[in-house]
Length: 204
Image (cartoon, rainbow, N blue to C red; front, top):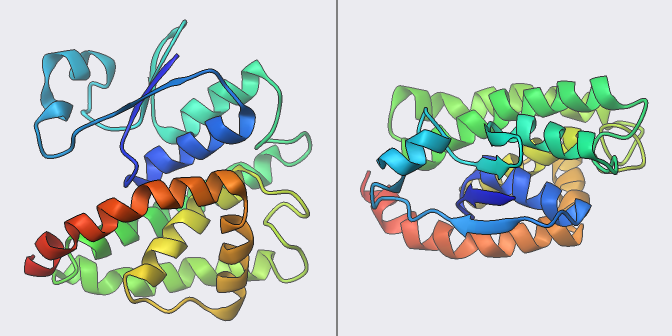
C-alpha cells in the first residue's frame, strides 16, 4: 500500500499516526504542495477531488482520512477502534474533523477573514463537548487513545501553536495525546512546515 500525504496536513497526520500505531506496511509518498501535484491527471485518477490523504490499496484508492483508518482497522488488528467503543470514537472523530480541524485550517491560512476570526469561537464550542466527555477519563473513550482523540488533539495543538489558548482540561488531554510516540513523531514532522509557511501566512 502507498500513502500520498503531507506532514503539515491534519487529515494526513491522522492517517500517518494510525499507520504508525498499527504497524501497517505502507510506503509514504509526501506530496509537494504548491507545485500543482494535487491537480495532475495522475493524482486526480487516485483522488478525484484533488485532496490528501489518499491510500492506494489492493482494493483500489481510498481518500478521506476516517475511511482510510476504517479500512485499515477492518483488516485488523483493532487498535484505534476497539470493540465496544466504535460509535463513540467515530462520533468524536467527526466532531474533531468538523469543528476543530476545519476551523484551525481557516485560522491557519485565512485568519484575517470573517471565517478566520470566527474560528476560535467554533473551536471553543467543540472543546466544551470534549471537556465534558473527558471529565472523568484520560481519553474520550476511557483509558485508551482511539480514533476519537486523533483529530481533536492534532487540531487543538495547532490552535495553541497559532496563538489560541486551550482550556485547561483540553491542554492536559492534548499533552496526554502528544506523549504517544506516533503522535509526537507526527508533530515533529509537521513543525518545520509550520515555521516555513509562517511568513506567507502572516502576509496573508
